[in-house]
Image (cartoon, rainbow, N blue to C red):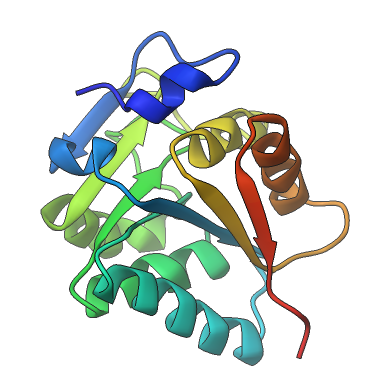
Length: 173
């Protein structure tokens, strides 16, 4: 049940830990949605339109379950009845951010939570850029909703381009 799209990337994780509906790890189309942790009202609205629309259309939405854009996209996809995959920057027995525990439970019921880190691994800031290659690597493309020029989002967009994935950007309000 290892995600087949990940086998196409350089430095694919040797192992993934997962909870939830593992069938969605290979379901296509899959689109990653990424953006800032400091989401604006415009970003929230666009996240709902894009991730909700993708979920309603049957696409799997992949994101990192971080505050802001990631959370908004997971929630919009789930609200539309879609499947979503959260790629964590910690072990799957932990939740980061902690306030997303309920969201994580909902994702596991309608998608999956995955990580390459051992299940009890605590979050560390250095893990999030590492995790981003999985977010982009599992997808056909990455949609940047809202982001600063230098950010984890820009790292994910660069990785997607290097992996041969499409990169989409939402224009500013």
